[in-house]
Length: 311
Ligand code: NAP
Image (cartoon, rainbow, N blue to C red; front, side, top):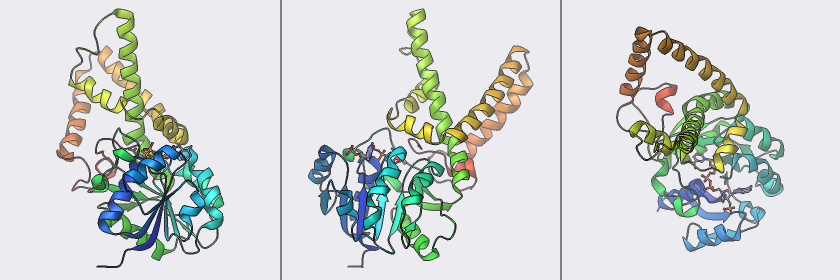
């Protein structure tokens, strides 16, 4: 049997993403030993019942001690506190990474606690579902998806290559970019669509109450597409919105301007303008193909378009 990529991997947080990692790490034998830690006794017990790892502890320090790879899979707003707690026992030479949906904010929170000699390489697998918790995970979650890494200045190339190898063995393709570029890209392809969906579905619900029309009951497929996004985790999304505030606000301002221009075109009967835009957007849709995930052509729109959703 081939040697595992890491002798010990510690998973801090064992929800949808952490438990999917645990499953693929076991299946692919990426770690000789999987240590699991999470803050609640209930989730920890569930992880143990599901046999996701080799040892389970509520003490994050115990889990990460001696680990060659530590993956933090907690809400982005909690990532700093987690690293502050585990930092004193991180092994020299270990790789510390995360899976958070925003990058600049996570780096700002985590970096200052990372001890000398530990390779901190932030990451974000572009995959997900509407579900959360250890029962929701599955080993195939990362297959044929992008994983974006945002290495910091001076990152050790060997550590970066080892982390790339890890994600490739999970089935993902890797892209590297700077954190600001990541946050701006995700704001437009993922965060804004969710905000718009939350808004439109909430608006329909309000309108239903006022007009007593059965808007939701008779909703057509377009509206239903929005409800899928609007059904996403109500705990995670405020966390993501607040931690990518700058990029989201910038994109929302741009969105409002473009929407106003569309509104004007409709008001003044400018069918040609509408036709030109709708033709351009149809071409983008058609270039994406049927299957979500990694597309043959590269570029921001195709690279990060989603599976079920991309927080
Ligand atoms: P999840 O299923 O809700 O699991 C969250 C995990 O974090 C649980 O182990 C939970 O512990 C722990 N946790 C929650 N609040 C915490 C806090 N304040 N301090 C410490 N630990 C805390 O979440 P997830 O979907 O796996 O998301 C984890 C990370 O992945 C997030 O940063 C998210 O942005 C990112 N991400 C998510 C998706 C997605 O589709 N869900 C996709 C890509 C990236 P207990 O259960 O023990 O409380």
